[in-house]
Amino acid sequence: MSLRVENITKRFGVKHALRGVTLEARDGEFVVLLGPSGCGKSTLLRIIAGLEEPDEGTVLLGGKDITRIEPRRRDVAMVFQGYALYPHMTVARNIGYPLRVRKRPSSEISAEVERVGARLGLTHLLGNLPKQLSGGERQRVALARAIIRHPQAFLMDEPLSNLDSRLRVDMRAELKHLQHELSVVTIYVTHDQVEAMTLGSRIAILKDGLLQQYGTPSEVYRRPANLFVAGFVGSPSMNLLPGVIESGSFRRAGLSVALHPEQLALIGARRQITFGIRPEDIDFSATAQPDYTPARVWVTEDLGNETLIRLALDDTHLILRAPAGARADFGTPAWFRIRPEKIHWFDSRTTEAIK
Image (cartoon, rainbow, N blue to C red):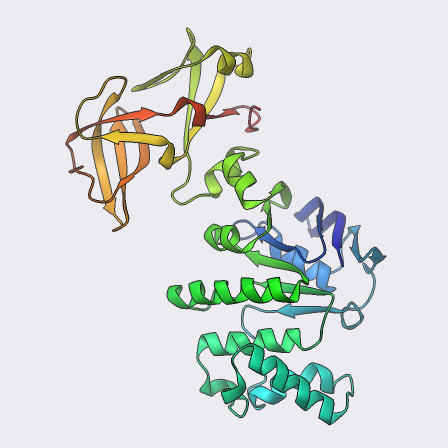
């Protein structure tokens, strides 16, 4: 069952929350809506759920136009950031509530609650109230309540954001495994790019109500469509340095990178260029090496499994990944080499990638 939104536009007064957004989630696909606060991702999810009405555009579920259908008849299940559990109901009654409002037989409801509860490891908690549960347990109850409906699509609005970092990692793995087993199209909203990269089969990146790029995690990371995507996806983010092309080289204060003929042909007549390079695509040395550029260590971050090093060249800073234990003390000389085949080029005027 596929889900498609076509040319969705939504205004709140004079503010455009969404501007002509079109994308499709294929049957069984896990699509993540990613972007900063205020970019329109939750508004798009609410339009799909029927909680907001678009000013323009269409929502299609399985090829059927559901744009004007009331929420309860859309056959989609929504999981909220705040869990939205009924505090006076037990876990079992919370999970079974969607079936009770549909007037299913009690025996059927009990059997389904047991089945879904066992699947999510909630069997021993079915008699508890929400206040007796941990954050992770409450989130599993909210998921169970959505699953028990057997919906055609799941809609999830930052469901893990209230959990601590360790529990978020565990719940991400559980959620991805569960979605793969259920094979139901899922639209998931987050502002956390690590969460988006680990969960999504495809990622839709939004900014100011506009769709910036829609692709697999590998595509948006390795071939960002523009400067915003390049800077937003990745931790730490891509080094982005505006400069000019002169005499066959990219130049800015403290940095000069000689370009290959094919790179010059790609750039063409452009002169105002932004140079991009991922931190893992810069080689580091604590001693002078042939073809390496000298710099000075500005700051280091020892993460245990690797070291992040920020280098200073006049007013230019570069951040790179180095092996754990790399010798790089504050203020000491260092040398680096940029891997030319890994460079990304962007038009500084349009911000679009040069391909």
